[in-house]
Length: 347
Image (tube, rainbow, N blue to C red; front, side):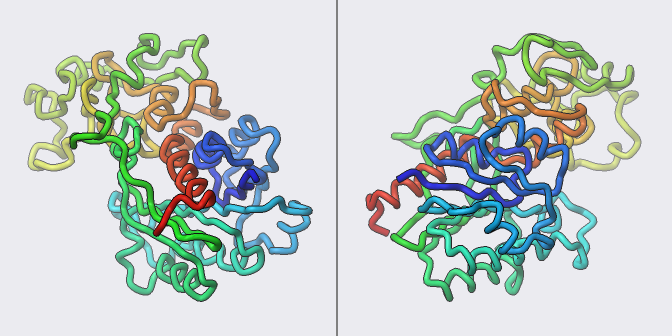
């Protein structure tokens, strides 16, 4: 029987898209980000899209929305992760996002889903008494089988290096994380490169779009940054610029060389963020064209299919892409759960 999915913190739908591709039936997506939920509704017209803060959603309300829930049931959850991100330089212990994963406890206790998938930034598992281990304690009390580790999406066919803390759990069978499929070792498929992912997309100038491809739109850049890009070779960065183009804040710093950097055609992309179309926020410049990535290129590097359309302004859609779970990565996790469901994993 097809596994049913409730996607908590669904965002624009990266996890849902991957699980659906694995063969699951997406019932509900839940998020409070209105712009992301518009994209979710557009791409999952058969699913319910609930616009709500999970801390204000009750089990009774969700039960009413669901009616009779087809089993087996999977809960997917990628709680907002910025408080634990290594890129967050303004951590705040009072940040309400820290406890959002705790809100999932109520729903797990009530519905006892057969399967769970959690994805978040590495860092959560380093907080000894934090939300991740509180969730582990819940799984132990409810007698779930589970496995977790830090995985890199690039090892599963995503054309982007993206390290994430991943947990999968099963109430009905032993389960383990999937083995990587891509890499440099014998027997593995070669890593997918930027060229393989986006090399086919039409050329663009900064601040333009190509209406023949959904969301193939780029941000404007200043004349000085355009000049900087002209001095940046494929795979290069600000270290390739003449002295007069180097920013004062960079003159005494040797780190953070990814900012204003170009991607390399022959390698996977660096981790995409919510600012993935801005050249000043990471290695997000096109390998050879003098511009940042388009929203479509960023989405493709997140392994979204080309017919997945993002709704909103260019900054809103870029944010949706940067926050998403890579589709192919979610698909691999979904297939692993289906394998466990079919009794093919021996633990």
